[in-house]
Image 1 (cartoon, rainbow, N blue to C red):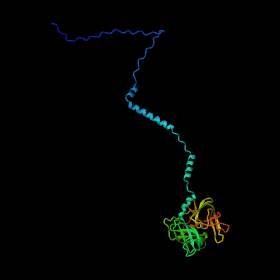
Image 2 (cartoon, rainbow, N blue to C red; image 1 turned 90 degrees about the vertical axis):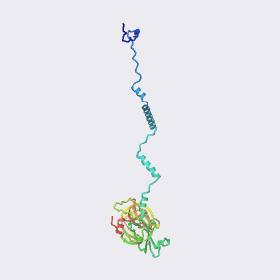
Image 3 (tube, rainbow, N blue to C red; image 1 turned 180 degrees about the vertical axis):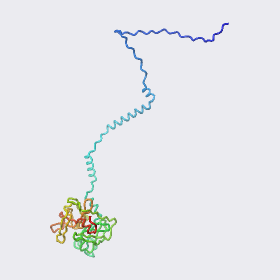
Image 4 (cartoon, helix red, strand yellow; image 1 turned 45 degrees about the vertical axis):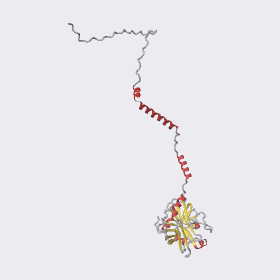
Length: 317
């Protein structure tokens, strides 16, 4: 008996196709075969494929580049800043001063000394109440100026302002008026020291300065009550040092005086001669006028403050 085979039937094999015969390459006239074409390049490269897979960063980079380009364009359109020179600074300062000018040195010195200046009136009659009366002013009163040098009410003035007075009244810059006592004299320098009986609030004594470094040409102001008007200020310079003066009547001879040309008239006597820093360097004492007129012609004299301090019992500078 015939057995059935255990192996499966073999698959049908495909019939092999007929071989393709390549056409012969054309031959150039000179017998050299032409070059064959290179195979086609693969599509894209790594960068192209990465850009396709990550579009977000690409747009971010493009946006940043665009913003930078706009910023550069705007900056280029702005006008270039100019270089600041000293001329520009000087012009700016001049323009500022023209709009708001600074106070003069004389004005600042006056403001500094004003709270220390008092009006001094020598009353020749016990009945005189001190009220201004034109007919009595010339005959029964002596008017002058003083300077507060201590906060206890000590005042420097000229001796000839209060000499022979029955009573003495002083008026402070704030309007406070009170009687004062004569507590010291120095006739050789025509100086008198007064003490006010009542004091205003916040009394400010003057700051005094040595005359050791004072020179002709230094700017000064004279503050006082000329002819009872004031307080008034006049400005000038130191004209000379160590001058001498003899009164027209020959009753007084003073030495070691400061000569100045700031206007001074009767009523300025006893007032302060002040430097531009607001410090007192002298006490206005006399004016020179060759005629009989007691008016200022450009020559005034002041006692150095060192002498005045000694008259008040203060240590010299």
